[in-house]
View 1 (cartoon, one colour):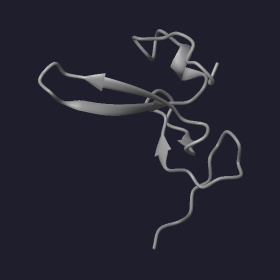
View 2 (tube, helix red, strand yellow; view 1 turned 180 degrees about the vertical axis):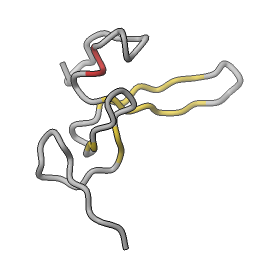
View 3 (cartoon, helix red, strand yellow; view 1 turned 120 degrees about the vertical axis):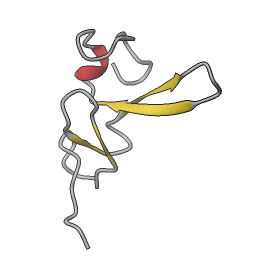
Length: 69
């Protein structure tokens, strides 16, 4: 079994993903998810930390996310 990784934001919950921008480990509560589509019926979720979600240098769709700003 692998090492348990905890969220690097709240430090209290097991992480389930990493921020696409900076790579920190995130739990479901701290991750800011963006749903993307390719136009060819492909849909996927991208996770950002609360800092990277609003950084246009990292997230081309940067802007406040309801409940996560």
